[in-house]
Amino acid sequence: MCGIIGFIDRTKSRMDGSSIKAALSLMNERGSGDGAGYAAYGIYPEYADYYALHVFFDNLAEPKKKVDELLQQWGEIVHQEEIPTIPQPGIRKVHIPWRYFFKPSEDLMVGRMASEKDVITYIVMQVNANVNGATIFSSGKNMGVFKASGWPEDVANFYGIENYKGYIWLAHNRYPTNSPGWWGGAHPFNLLNWSVVHNGEITSYGTNQRYVEGYGYKCTLFTDTEVVAYLFDLLGRQHELSHEMVVRALAPPFWDDIDRMPAKESELNKAIRLTYGSALMNGPFAIVVGTEDGIVGFTDRIKLRPLVVGENGSKLYISSEEAAIRGLDPEVKNVYTPRAGEPIIGRFIE
Amino acid sequence: MKTLRIDAKGMHYTPLNQKIRAAVADGVEEITLDNVLGQRFIGDGLRGNVKIIINGVPGGDLGVFMSGPTCIIHGNAEHAPGNTMDKGMLVIHGSAGDAVAHSMRGGKVFVKNNIGYRGGIHMKQYEVEAKPVLVVGGTAHSFLGEYMAGGLVLVLGIGKEKSMTDRGIGSGIHGGEIIIRGEVDDYLLGVGAKKIEFTESDLERIAPVIKSFCEHFELDPTEFLDTNYTRIGPASSRPFANKYVWE
Image (cartoon, rainbow over the protein chains, first blue to last red):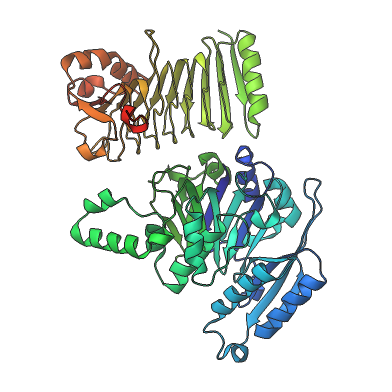
């Protein structure tokens, strides 16, 4: 059991984190104090062209030296600092959260990597798999993940979450059931601009993990949700599937439902299931994904976890509980529960 | 009549439920809760005939283990209202989340609009006159009456072209009945469920339930008092007898 929230203002009007903190705290019953986290998009406009790498360092000696060296091999760090934190009685600061604003250099990439995003993905995988005492937990542009072990309010106060203003917010209150509660295991899980919050478990994790590892991703964070971020990056970025199609691949219709579809639709759905059989996710889940152009919410195919949607003008809310949505926006309209496997998508209005 | 009004704004469910219990013990007959937002377990294990008016959106497990009281909810409800409820009534002037009337064993849950997945899951009934009743004005998502062992689930499909369009109705049902307004496509039936003819005597049996539901939501019951229903029950008393036992 966990509690999740996804929010987008489709006009990119930014909101600070204080109401997200309050709304997530309404669902404290869904957590156990072993992890909470927030992702906010639009928070680093002054470094919008740079990848914001958030790193947990065990110490600032050897692990940091190795990360610095790796980054220098690929590009330029324009700014770096410890992420400001405020001591909280409920949080033991076992890692030092650090951020780099980094850009891969063209000349260093030539002949080695095809795109900046490939470089970033490579760096994240290298550090997380090979550098002891360092974990890159956020690597997007103009966005960042803030997470730790603790209760939602404590984690929010630790990072001073009300000081960040974003047009997308994801929030997660964790109740770890079958993997350890540690800072890196708190949600959101992130790669590039994909961030994932998840309530439930991915029982097909082994199959999904083997599938993404075949494409160079490395699952290193001891929690099933990590693989969802990599699946979105693989299908959404590398294979260029629309958000709707990614959801269709991860939570596809049942075969007998496909048989009842009109011929063309049936053909498409069969093709997706056959192509992406190893990406299909089984088990109970309700998920919200933050992306470059919006948010995507969906559940498993038989709806074993709750998901509620609400709208108010340019704002779209997705959460485990209606109360959290009403906490964020008492004037919310059109509150409903989507169907199992149905993608709920909020995109920016250009 | 002794009444009480509580402003639940920002209040955790524990002190809220303590206040409700103290009031009932004190002989209060009607309690109004304002600004309810996500507080769980309202009416948990409460006995007696108190009426609780809830303004807002109560949290999960509303009326869990409740035995007697009536809750009128002016708003939606979250997951599992009526969980293992024994006696009494929930009248929800809105929609409700998943697992409505979960394991309910007596009393009534009336939902004006729609419910989520697995409504009436594990509903049961004993050799007593009382049996649990769940009535849904709108529609329900998949696995309605899943593993149902007793009681009545009634879906009226008000404002819907078809009352039910989600699959798995009565999946694993081995007692009780699911009655749905209008026709139900065969492929929507779950494993172990079958259609049973809906007769005049069935209508006579459920007419008081329909009238009571309509009275609460100020609807005209006339259009629901005919035999245009589909009745769904267990295919056998032990539909899965052969699933786990080999002879």
